[in-house]
Image (cartoon, rainbow, N blue to C red; front, side):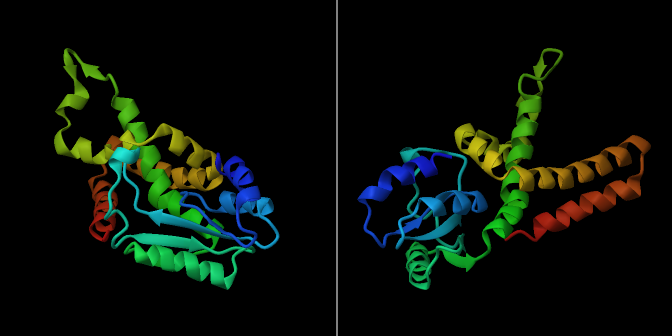
Length: 212
């Protein structure tokens, strides 16, 4: 959410026909908020390299981070053909696969594929934080499964706070999808419906096996 203030401070010192781009995880809010701040001849080409890590700061830099990963370009009213070409060439030069998507469509997709997993992982980790059974700390017995499932719970709260606040509606819709599946699991377990449990479980396994 610091982007508008940052751009407003930069604009007086930029070339009149500067191309503005970003690397944020939400695009609809970015486009709607930044476009009014542009100079008359400036172009905005919003972008999202889908290649994040749970680690933050300069010490976590990785020169191969974008190789073979997807970067989504979300053209809008202030995106000229030349500006789009320049930004797409920049991302291809990093080794990224570039594709285009409408800003709000991007936010709906990423709410499900990225933002929901973060909230779920963080909620799971928070639920187990300090949880004890007798003298045993439950999380200490989680082994690889728990570590894999909660890996992204180590992400920056500052960054994710801004993501959830600027993509609120799409994330709430995605949480609704998850809640339906969780409720289905709970119901199957409560009544001992083995067939239903296996159906949901195998649906999840099929999705996981299809990830590339």
